[in-house]
Length: 147
Image (cartoon, rainbow, N blue to C red):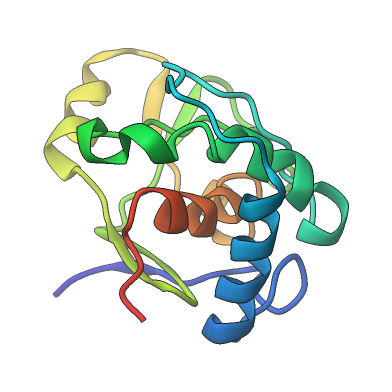
């Protein structure tokens, strides 16, 4: 059976209604300056959208022109609720947002286990918002919306 990481902060950090969320993100992204080149990496804030959405959109809008070329996204974020050393992987097969499911590359994730500082730690992901708030932006800019 497929393991789904449900959103922990939808409805508080960002809208849990798909239509409202899509409209909010579209407005933020429309305000951002377009870019011809896509960056290899971006650093984006991870607060509630009313605080950081405009800033995040400026970074994510830079991905849109090359969305067809982007095959894999690697997200790294801090943990606000669980202390640990190293990197905490999620064992989920899918991360869910109000805009739909995002499948995880389990083979690539499993390959990280060869490093001593990497382990599965689902508790670190259960209530964490730092990566979750990035996902709807990725769904919008990379054309991954399902709902």
